[in-house]
Length: 144
Ligand code: DQA
Image 1 (tube, rainbow, N blue to C red):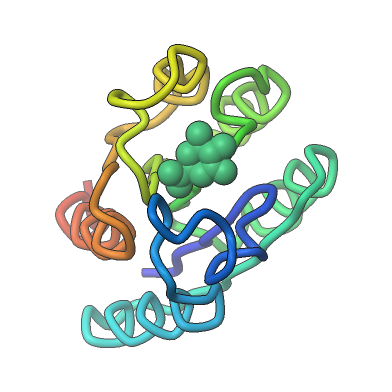
Image 2 (image 1 turned 180 degrees about the vertical axis):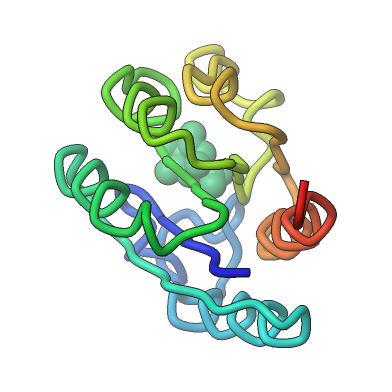
């Protein structure tokens, strides 16, 4: 299975961004854990981080033919990007939404995800494990 992993805005700052919420691991370490788990599942991974909504849509478009599934942490775009929502829907990518923190227990604006309706599942609040669970979920839908 080919899995496209997209990290949204400010996730390049992992490690120094609010460690009490997001932990101390860097994005590079997070990606290394994702790739290791994906390899164990026999998956190929392409991982990208972008701070720009348009770039995320371009990445989705450019990789849609290659990808069998999408694991996306849209970061702050989660809460208001109808453009990313529409791109996932238009490309018909089986998508899984991921968050390091538990967005349902934070500020009210974070409790809304406009991305969730176009995703098959959402994993949140477990740090890097949220991503690994998303990969396991991809394995469970393989061939469906
Ligand atoms: C986040 C939660 C979002 O509310 C926030 O804007 C992020 C990260 C998470 O992984 O917990 O940037 O998506």
